[in-house]
Image (tube, rainbow, N blue to C red; front, side, top):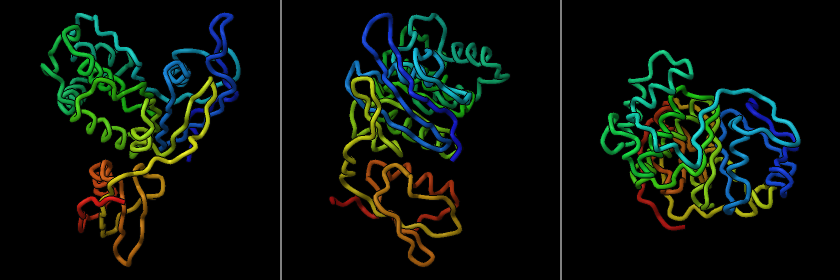
Length: 273
């Protein structure tokens, strides 16, 4: 895989306070989805601001310059613009010639309350988060950085966000997101890391997938399933490929299979493991 961004011994300190980040090493590769978990105040948001280029480290170095889409942990919801007007304005700043069609499609897909013309200042936190997600995805960035992206979203939008993360990875871009819950991180990420006391480490445990679905595929499809989030097992069986997947990821994996040229032969009811 191609490395899009590297952090070498990155540290961050505000004034004379304690280190928020301490000697962080991280390589973000194309086609990778990284989930970062940790308690409030552990440094997750600071790490993402550095990845997004919003903040500079006080120690170490960051190399690489991918195009970046960023969703912060707090969205500027006080603007008087409509959702579409806001996205149109940001698209022009980023040099995108036409954004309306893509913006409307994203907002409709995320089921924004009030539609594209809804005033942002009247939106709930969850609906403002949908506008933030749309702006991050407008230009199809090489690196998508999402700070607590599920915060406030309704259940239907949770599923759409999972699809958008999968689609971003499928086109060869990378995604880094933070989450409070480790099971959510494992559901969507190919690799999960834990931030604690300013240091980034691999998680000690792998979350149990819970109920699983059985998927049988056939055809000339392509792709390596080994790094697919939610995959428990993949077995080649003659002209078929049999997948055992976490039930919560079955729809996203079916979508990925169809995009890769596979035909779906059967999907069995999820069973407990």
